[in-house]
Length: 586
Image (cartoon, rainbow, N blue to C red; front, top):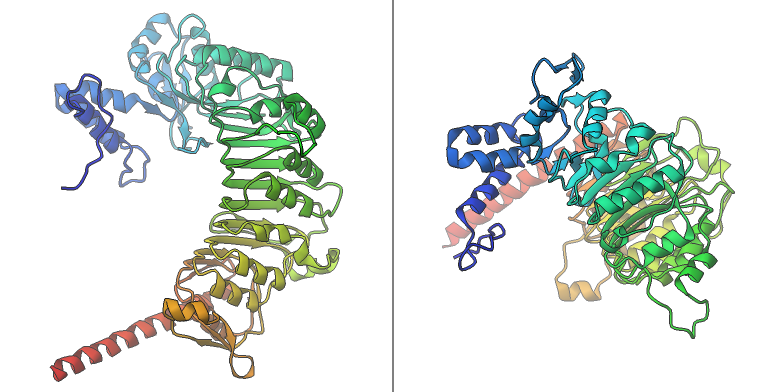
């Protein structure tokens, strides 16, 4: 008998079996969060029908139906019709000032709301769909006013402030946001309005920490500010936080030191600015540069780290000052305003601060100012953004010799599954790709972005050494293609003693096809003969689908499909002949 996953049992249930009410709620939640045929994310219609079909279903169905709201509009629409209206832009507006009796009609439904605004399991918030009704800013102001005396949503556990209104809150309403949150709030997306000062933001955070002490997922954005917003982040939240995202918010060295010893923090996304000082960071934690002294652990439970820095030197200083013993996923984005610089010290610092053998995802991108042509395209890759430029850009950029040594520290992360590199300088060449394929054989996703097109030899090296690669984004020069001869797959014993690639007659490459690759983003790759290009890609990646924006690749894609259909029909006829021969032999 197969095991069945049941919902959490009530303490009143006997022998560990769930009660009937628990099973009903579990089934209703599955129906509620299942997508419908018309593309909606929530199946509200079926839950509403269940609430009307049976008295036993009424309360659990209403609890599930009102548990998650994209916007406060459904609550406001429960008020009397003479108080509100919906205009042609699907915005709920007030026809008259609301009364206390109007809100008393809405409160029975407001008590059932637990989540307001979209978010996902990783703690990332997203905006509500544009077709759903939203509320006017005047209604948000009235809701914040009535929350001063009594909490309007007493059971709210997740709040996305973007869902309150399409307009940004003013400083006055922003200071009252703590009155809108319940004591059980665990997920919060907070947007600091442009007119707020660091003192105002700190006061609001302090009041939120007093009223909502159990927040575990927190995201703070500085509105539409271009420069980072200085913020002092301390208090009881540091004891419970698990996911912290600080967009366009700069932190002092002391605040980063407080985050470094947070006991439950496993995901951290923030910006490094000139306010960070490695010496002050060490002094606040009592760290020492002496290798003979025992160093306390920093970020002991951190699994995911996303860093954004204005200079590469800030990254180097940060990695030299911290230890990341359990880091699995890291993303680095830096703006090197001082010009081209060597990123090797920062990569070596990352290698020393974390355990290179457990890191699974590494992505770094440099946004250094350069003489980039205005027509250089941007192409969306399978798991990220691939930015490429024309071949003429390589002539305007300085040469780095040897290029592969700049990225040499990456080769020590032998367990990487996802690697993304984006740099405006020609630091990625065929030699680096060859070494990368030999040292990082467990790669499953690879995104390479740069001004220099690689040769087909890089594709052959990836196909033969990275046998688990599933997604690839890389631009290459396919004007001259090597001759490819397929080799039959070897048994495990022969594969261990036989090289995966060898040279045939007159430079012919004898390769074993790589069957794992499913998506290949060719970017701005160029070629001369569509038939030859289709044969080359099909020989090394016979299971991949091309992703492109240049219409000239339509011919390559269609030829690859024709070749595969012909191979399938040929294989079917051969297998049928074999079965006929077997029947005749029997």
